[in-house]
Image (cartoon, rainbow, N blue to C red; front, side, top):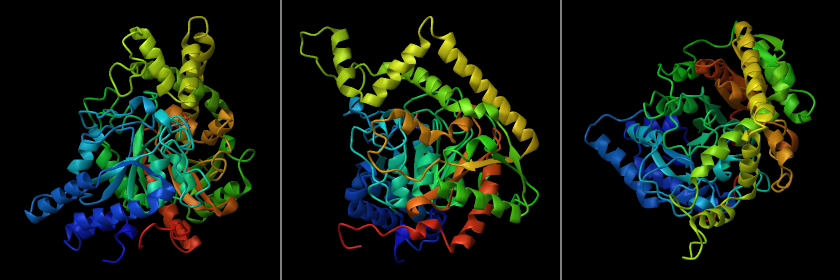
Length: 504
Ligand code: GLN
């Protein structure tokens, strides 16, 4: 077979199952691609060739012995470095975890192995998943493969860049306020935040526990669905894990639940217009027209409380983070600084935290500690929780009338590296459209909608009610084929070829 890095995950799985190619050959092609391109992109913080090839060999051995093959057997994947995996370090993009090798696998990693997925390595991310650009990593900046001077989104920017650069057909990210959807949008790929509680958080280092959710990145809606079904499902080791069947997302992605004809689609008034780049708005308006031409009943839906999602999120997430990150004290994991035999334990903790955490993490811990402190709790954290309830009610009211809600995924295309680095509020605004469904907990997908300003990718966001994940896949799949017809093929076909270090 010619270039194995051009195959979709579903095509790769079929080829491996049919014996047309070995898992080892597929893994090797992707490891080579990483070697050739990652100096420029820097999607990965850790790649272990031997471990990867051993995992691939296990798949080939299972096939040779006629054993059962998992649904994604032999498909390579890039894993965000916020999930624990035995045999590899977990850094969360932070210096404070430098050198930590977790002794256990995240549930998600166990499920990947059971499905025959071959993990290529760990991807770069904003420190503890706080950010929208992957510039807040202690291990360097990741570059957008569409334009190496632009950000790949964040916080899962290593994962989105890896998929866009054909270093991996699949990747896993986490989405607390948009960290799967926003990077997917700005790199021209598909990214899904499943319903909160669908994917186990066991072995996912916590940022904001009531919001954190793992989910898939892929180059097609079907591939995302296949990975979604591998990742999701009840886990008794996660107290918020949903104990109910996973919605039929793969069937929906295959069109088995029908297209969009007769579906009711709501366009959210608050998530468009002012603040959205002309190119983003133009692609979004085309998607709305396309849906109408496919027979959907498109209406405008007003969700007034969405205007307060950003301030509410930036109180709730830092509050939860200030509690979750207290465990990084220099005693149990990774870095320990100032332990010279003279400093007391509290001084060692203070020195370790001062050296180990970056500026954005420190900012969030201070914001959260303040918002939770006696005397301010009601005015900040309590008030934000009330807004969260109002947002949930707006969603519930909307879903009594419509099947899915629609908005642009991000206000702008990928911005230049460095542009917002010193302006936290400008950075936070990248999440304007993704925060509401995070606070609500429903599923949401970002789908490539075409090119916008500066010829960079634009994403459209599809949202659905809690546990109705199949709806976003159903509409996503129908839109994907309509959009590909309009643009003459997959959007990623238009990505400029990266200069490769070796022979391509
Ligand atoms: N950009 C948002 C933040 O910085 C969302 C991050 C995320 O989803 N992990 O908090």
